[in-house]
Image (cartoon, rainbow, N blue to C red; front, side):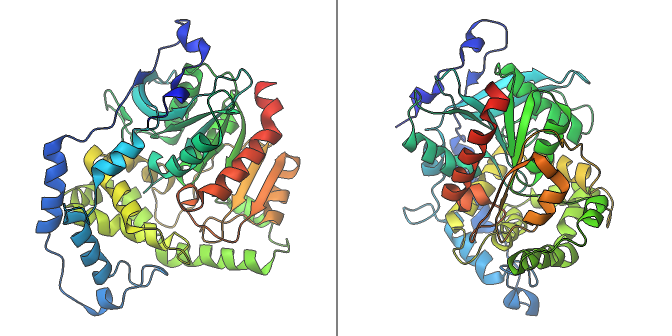
Length: 419
């Protein structure tokens, strides 16, 4: 049953002041849907080697394994009841109100056709919040959280306006004319303009991965962004120096060790995507199995494998990239964040006068121990919670704890956002 009651647009959108979002239904054309399994079935996967027969993607040893890829190929290519069913996923996603809207970034006049899902509240004091994914994720990561919210509240009781976009040039969001390379500042501006176009004079930004960079930039630059919460954080060299003598717990030490291991043996993909985006995109867009191997490794290694992420969930997101033909477009984020091998992230504006919240999941490679957060953010740190389970795809793998954190953070910052 569609969640139609959550589709009532905020009153300001009916006044004609802003462009009105157009309802959107996700539907992959039948020919495209039939073509993917045939391509997966026809893919010629390599022969056994020492590396692919000894690979363990849970800890990054050699990468994806031959057995995992062969099993995934069989499931993806199987169009029977026991195989992968995109239409079932599509129908579930379409229960959630979705929209498209054109916005223009004031700084350079670029026009974005932005896709977003939303649960709109009818409460006048609802807190607007935007949730932003990264790579290799998609807005689909937040569907379990949206399901929990729809089960917990009605449109009349929901305390928030929940906005979940396909971030710029990912998935179903694109530019009307592509005349220049997309940058982080312009992508963040597009997200801020989306919230302004929805009539929100104040909002909260949440993000992980690329979404973390967008949320930090938005809160650091735009007045409308009143607070931000992330579950991923890369420290600058200056920040690392400032916390060098801070005492941390054994669990936090283990997280930092995971981060160090990722930086030394697991970050090569980011430099490939940041320095050779055309090559990797053209290679992977030639075969769904090639794309699955590249992306599937990340979904496995970056998750908490004490309760592994289901293959069905991985296939749904990789299928979304394939059907939306968006892998190549999404490479802008790596050009923006890792354009030079071995170089740290470029500086991202950071608001130290607005409320900040952090959720720490043990298998996240961009860790921020509590003591570090207290030094870096000082009094701006209004929420911090460490969890015993979860990883990089927290909203997908740990939706209950993730949502509980968000609700507590939004309750803390509500007065800063809506008065």
